[in-house]
Image (cartoon, rainbow, N blue to C red; front, side, top):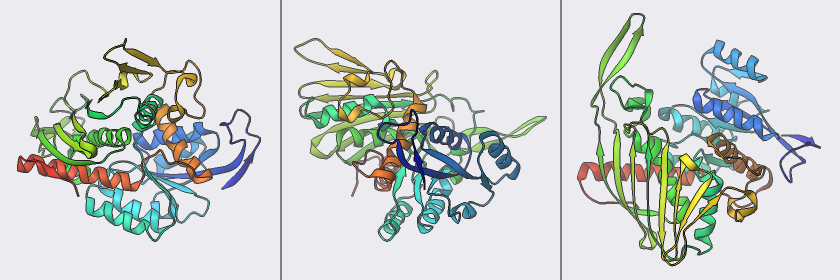
Length: 386
């Protein structure tokens, strides 16, 4: 890491610090989003990327001013200038690449799900026992200021005893049988789609907010489009029918520690819903509602006094909700949450302190939960988590 001094307008408390050099493996949509987030931090840079297509790699380096590119990610892992590696590849190779990053002794930020099999995620935890490697999973939604403020309210007892949590994550990008993506194919995306892809985010949110583990689940899943058309040629347009086994929809009942009840629904076939993420939390003193479409607002419900709505402002947030660099009057959207997530991880690399980001142990627990949900749907029964 290279030392940086006198960073004008830099993050609070970091005007003299080390500059983190990051490498990114996989430059699809999430890889580009993380590249842009790193560049906005001011104290970090993307020093190398690994992309199989050599021409694409050169184009990215030219456009973004990235000094190095590799077509084999192992060469990036051998680069002594790289401090931390972002794994932004498809689900089926998360395990092998995360394993190789750990063995190379690099700090690692993995895209979710951590793996597609809990045996593999457990193996990563075993490797971490003998390798001093900081690790994170890219669950971005816990890094919205209002979500973190809600966590602070719960920790502070403002809601009283927590009774229940419920919510949704709804999308429409796979509504038609002509909609196709690698996530639909279980050989690339794994045995679960809607639950592993977006349900994993909601599961992480619930665990983070409540500070409680899920102990039992009961699920009902559905694949509304058992056959989809995959485009194999665009000129002329030719498609082939593909049998689909991964779920379009899922509804899950949950039991948490401390007797807390839960319920959430995920769907990738809900017309008009682009990012329909929400949660409601009921407590003995008050309740909360947050939704991504109005991410800068937190509704607070009371029985014997008027309900309230907190609108995002740094001066009104509790300690848990405050972020370095948060500005007055700015609406917080997904790119800010991604930046906050990476900032939280990087600051831990540089300074240590209280961890707010999800690590590999969180990622493993989410993988286990998705597997229990799949078992519950198959067995038509409640399933316990160890």
